Image (cartoon, rainbow, N blue to C red; front, top):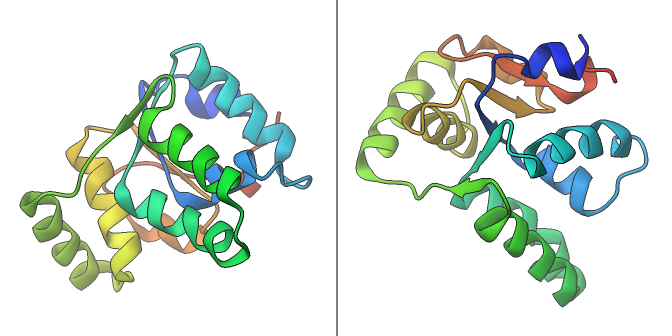
Length: 148
């Protein structure tokens, strides 16, 4: 599916960790698609939504490798990025995550991500984890299934 078609009716797009990492770290295999999506976010359509899980997962390797600038790049984008809404995890999201884990056998991080996306009224969830497609509460867009 073309990126333009996938995002046509999306006003709020939840960003799972992988697309953010691909964009910030300039992953050559995913850079053109990531750039296209983040160019659209920079222009304000769609609005991106992120969570503390996205931030925590994105920071692991830069911390491990001692890359302070990359840590700051992730934080700036995820927490304070232009047209990016950083949504904290509240009790309601935690309860919904537990329900999602029970119904779909998701890991805790994935369940929290989906719960935050739902609580923030996202129209779609961007990931590169095809296993999340079993979630039916919102459209799951897998980066590797998109094209320019």
